[in-house]
Length: 518
Image (cartoon, rainbow, N blue to C red):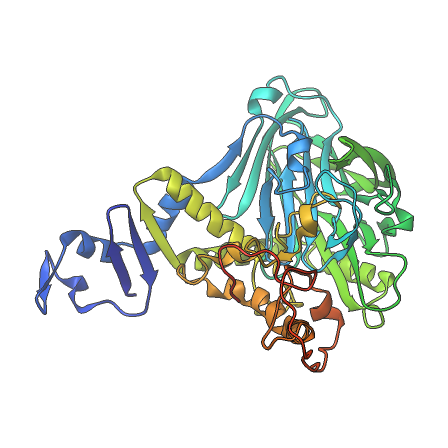
């Protein structure tokens, strides 16, 4: 392997190439064509890239040692929760108590009309919540629950590790560790729960979708979401091992144009899911406008983790999005989720997904790396690359992840509620493009492919926009969504208006900073 090294006072950039340079095996500084290779360069070329990267990345993590505030995790803007994703599905880990764990799901094609954003109530196109998964105690907190609690964003292994202490089923203290991650070869989310105590611990798990929503921009409070984003839930017991499932639809009204449906299914590997049941509670879905929890429809069950054992919660997310007349029914999307999770409901399947997950991220990190003298710069740089790789990817090689080949929203797939600012749309003033600033220079240009696809497909509309204003070329409006790409045929060219129009209007590129590219 050839590695090219560029040294400047603050950092060293290393890109993995193919063959070793002729001087790499030389001992001591060498002179080639009048250039003396520094000894530091020679020493670096002899080292193993992955070993060096593991050292760098293992020292970079986001950690919390006290529960997060739900008002920070869900505030209608970028969440403070810890992030996982594969460019299609996303999960926000939000430990809002020291004895429970909540995960909020999103999917990059689950869009509709939002009736809230940030701190206001208004109609706007946007990405919707995909519901979530909770892990609740059935026993009391452990003696040292407050000091034992921690959550770590591990970017090397692309997972979130949560430590907590509960009482076991006999009343003794039991330390638990949860390792959570998104698979990279399927739309699967896994939480591995290890009981490091001496007795069994029973937990309650709940998969849920929002049961309340703003009905329109005139609404003063949330009401039953069946009239806005229809939802269903249940337990599939057709085969051994019950499966909890929920569905959500993006609207009740349109019978043409864009529509999206999503389903989620969860089962257990390494234990039994006991007493499956429906539960409607106000303890996970939070509205930042009102500052309180609202009801969710939950499908729950109890899971007992034996001492020294690991139990895995396996969740599969499915969707169908596009023109109303071509997408799947809610029933079919729900079946996809249930069949999908059953395909991975074994320890062997979980192990394969985890090995593929580690391999994907090893390859991603080895595309290039940088050695910094400033640890804060290193944390920012690698944290940004982690977010990029987790939220934006083209369709996977096996076609199972991001088959719609969409980019992440402005907030990635991290959507705790139906209220993300500006709908999370693809803003072209700079917000969306900012995610890709380092995609080329860091040798990760493929992360930009889905965004470029949106821009390229939308071009005929923007050319007609320019023509309507009497101009050649294209005039992009400030913000786009996936609606054209997934649900509309491209329009024929329109004739150019005879009199040019100047100045700002709803059809102009009315706000631009930091340039425009695609």
